Length: 66
Image (cartoon, rainbow, N blue to C red):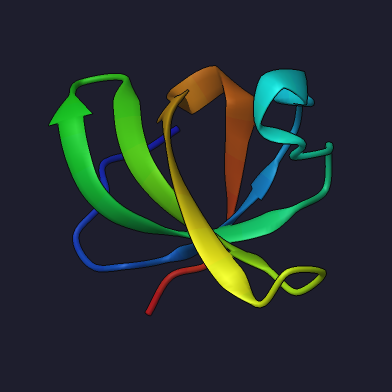
């Protein structure tokens, strides 16, 4: 994955079962924690809230660079 400059939309390429986030879930990168980990915010439509997760670069793909 390339470097992130703004808040792009990303798609999970792996499940995060303990957070009930499945492969294909769309989120927004909010911050970079190190060279290969990002804080990503996901919308939880089923409960009307958001969840943030620390996700490694190999578990996401950029789908829209703002």
